[in-house]
Amino acid sequence: MDSTGKASERLQVLTRQVTAGHATTRLAVCPKEMRNFLVHDNKDLRDAIFEFLKDDMYRPNNYQGLMDFREQTLQRLKKFVAQKFFSVRDYTNDPRRFIAALECLMYADYSLAIKAGVHFTLCGGTIAKLGTAYHHAKYLPGVDDLTLPGCFGMTELGHGSNVMGIETTAVYDKEARQFIIHTPNDEASKYWIGGSGQHGKICAVFAQLTVGGQWQGPHVFVVRLRDDQGQLMPGVRIADQGPKMGLNGVDNGRIWFDHVRVPREDMLDAFATVSPDGAYSSSIPSVSQRFGTVVGGLTTGRVLIASGGVDGAKLALTIAIRYSCNRTQFGDRPIMDYVTHQARLLPPLAQTYALHFALGHLKTLVAARRPTDAKAIHVLSSGLKAAATWGRVEAMQDCRECCGGMGFLSSNKIGPLMTDMNVDVTFEGDNTVMMQQVARSLLEDKAALARGSPATPAAGVLATGGASCAKTLQSLLAFRESALVAQVAGEMVSAATRADGPAAKAAASAAAFDRLLDVVVSIGWASMERFCHANFLQELDRAPESLRPALELLAQLYGLSRIQRSLDFYLAVGALNRADVVALRNATAELYSALTAGGPRCAAVTLCDSFGIPDHLLQAPIAFDWRKV
Image (cartoon, rainbow, N blue to C red; front, side, top):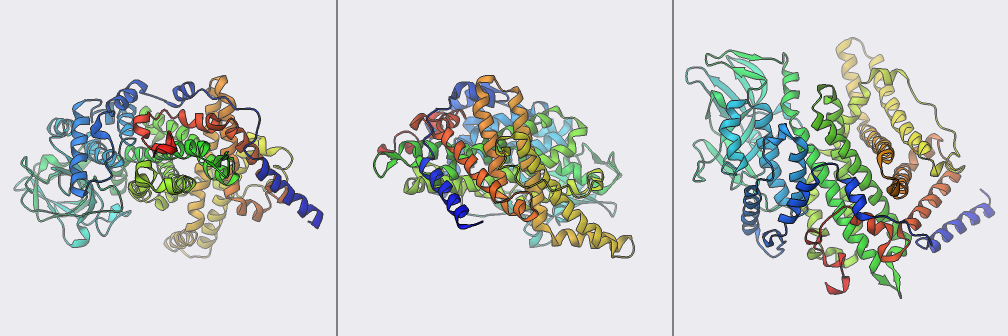
């Protein structure tokens, strides 16, 4: 490019910066109508829980200590449970009601949401799904009324993501008709077990089962941790893990079992049983398949964690965008007028809508309970959990910064949420591993792999009007996904070709996969971004006509922002050029203008109001009047 061209480009950038936020036509959004469209299910239940959470017990107290916070969280949960908004049996009977009820708690306090989630989803849900009528009758009433606070004993000190490698043992004693649960070494101690530090009375424990000297893989046992008076049971040792970076209302603990005897009937045996005389039988033939069934119950937990990530972003964005559209600086100019604010707050707003719709699709699949959807549910729950929580981390940090010092004040909610929720990127599945799960499913699709590398789109498509074309944006997102899959698949095939024998070929292919793990994670991202954008476009088809202009704008901004984040890829392969980059930036600037036109009641604000977060749960002073902090 000559100097004239460079000067012209600089002028375009300066013009964009000067004029951003000064569109004259306000984009109209009716928050009530949009909220009705966003709420996919159980609106009356959600409203009833939000109304209940007006109780002063659920107001934040940023001055209390660790033990007081834990006790408050327990009492909050007890009061919530007493309302009987839902039952643990809804985990299998009405998944959408179950998920909706627990989602609402996140808006009040994340420690409360996680303590409830561990108890109802991980412990109670595991018993509901993997247990039989005997277990349901024995344990689920106590789960429902909280007389049996529950924990989930999967993670060990030495085994986080590698659940198949856990070392806790369960050996069947035929004479006593009992299982002996044992921790053979410190690395096998159950670690980070939420609810076990002080309150837990039962635990769904994962252990390697041996029957008659034969190993059968991980199975789940309901183990009593404490008696009705809260005293530890014989052979159970628990160490409280103390203060954490956040989430301090949850009492995490570390558990050791010293040859703890459990009745034969307390193995969750919906898919595998041990007879009194020690005969093992299962409807699922192999250890690996049984393991997949056992851990399949984590799906609902991942849906809730992903939903929490999206809801956390909704809270932070509502606070930051309201504040930014009212807070003036250097005269009477709102700070949202600055493109540096717009670029940090508006793409996350579009992303939050995209992820909300994507999770709605996933919840529909979960509720349908069709066996043919099992793989799609696993892939989507893994990928969306990672995308939603990683996205929340970035969105909250930008919201915090865009509020300046106000964002650092605990009463303005963003800061405490950031530290409380930071754990969501690594629990219920480490995000890096979750994205690998997405990539593996694509790399195992032989039909897709047979198509080879996709043709590279001709550069210039955005510069010639494609920046405003949904089909063009979707094709670019799909191209990135296909190209990255082809890259990794090609390396794996090439490595296998150079090896001799099936075992060596498999090892060489696996080694190539490991060498390219950074690209593998990028495949996961590319797949989720392509899916979220495509799903967003489908949501437009069912949207009321009055909402489509705003939703189309958000869908376009989501697509453009995803492409902008991966410009290095598109430029490297020649799919975009400099003119495309300029067109992309100009297009996003126009969208920023449309979203911020209208001052304090601009579309960005009303789109946040459409999330339907009640004022008593929003709480942050700067979301209402920053002068009255």
